[in-house]
Amino acid sequence: MIVLSILAFIFCIIQISILRSIAILQVIPDIVLIIVIYVALFHGKIAMWFGFFTGFFIDLYSSKLGYSALINTVIGYGIGNFASQFSREVPVLWVIMLFGGSLFQKMVLFAVQKELSLFFFGRYVILGSLYTTVVGVIIFFILRKIEQGKK
Amino acid sequence: MQNSRKISVWFIILIFICIVLIGFGKTLRGIRVQSQLASVFSPFQKYTLYFFNALKIKQENKILRQKVSMLALENQQLTGYKYENEKLASLLGFKAQSSCTLLAARIISRSQEPISGTCLIDKGKMDGIERDLPVVVPDGVYGKVLEVTKNTAIVQTIFGFNFRVGAVDLRSGVQGIVGWEKGKGCVFEQVPVHSDIKIGDKIITSGIGSVFPKGLKIGEVSEINIDKTKLFYSVPLKPACKFSKIDYVFVMKEASESFQNNKEFVYESIGWKVSLIKDERVKETNNEKPTRFAKDSARRDRNKREKKRAFSVKFKAPEPVIRPELRPTRLPRSDPVPMESGFLRNKRSGTEPASPKQSGGQE
Image (cartoon, chains in turn yellow, orange):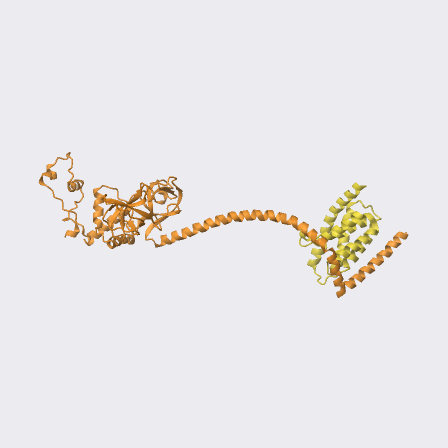
């Protein structure tokens, strides 16, 4: 859990600093959300703490304090509660959880935006969720290999 | 079960804190606290960016180095083009001013031994180049065409030891031959010792020899060392053109009417009164193959002679004294012709003698 905490902190730093350079059509993957969903899937409801602190960290560098913290906490708690009923090693479940979690986060953030447009929705919500899902699956495989190797 | 309830309670507390944060973040104090907290983590952000940028900069540096070397190469090329452009512009200016038909040619190689003074140009028979055509540059005479191939031609430059051209001092009208002398370089030779020659005198082509038209710049007298024990002396010249600095030359294909008129003007201006008819007669007497210049000159002069009869020979050749014993009727055909019977030789070859009675000026 300590390793995952450090990893979450590193992901937060990367998210706010250098991730902009790998943007596709100005859309970047949310690797902080990926680590929250990973913890939720494989470690349960404790992910709400990850969600709160990582979300709070991201909020410090955004114009909307508290929103990411709230959303990430809800996602961590919700997926942690939901995933306990399923087999967690199925990649399809990862994809569903990643895409669902990302879509929820971006929908909420889209809803609180002052400028609502279909272009913005398509680009930042749909494309952003897809991008996060693809990158998330890769990170999930890597983290699972690391965790299984430790065991 | 208790643990699950505990987590749920904590979840509700966290949600409450988030809602409080959302409200607090909209206040001025909240924004101030937010920025202060953000600055706590800024060193992490800074070093991450620094590390990432270092990698990026390394790649950029590699690309920029390549670009710099490419641009340096391009710059060198452009400098060369600039130099070439300046030269070509000056040559174009010269061509526009010139009243002759000029063919621009590029020097593609030069002789390794400076004394031979030849160079190869990129124009040949296909471009209408013929042997003995004059080669000029804006500064003056450069040489003449020595040999012609299909696409190239060898030019014998004024800097070669074989080069000779009839020349005249523009100021005093003193005639001589410009050539190349070992140790002295370009010289104005066959100049009588008592001639009026001064340092700085401009030497131009005289037109004798039928290769070069009259009035082309050759150079100027650079020094005078008079040796009174000789009948003629050689005056060192400073050539008007620089052999090594020339990349483009012009082959003079034919001279226009105005240029020919200019020739006469040059002759008159230097006080040298000799009719062109005499030039023509000399060529015919020597059975030389006349060049294009000579042909043009002869045709024009013939027309003028027929119409006006105005070109008189002011410089009268001495009337040949023919002794009765040397008359051609008395000589058998196989006999050698005596030295003083140049007149008779002309008679036999069918050309007109240089008799003042038959020239238009005597009528």
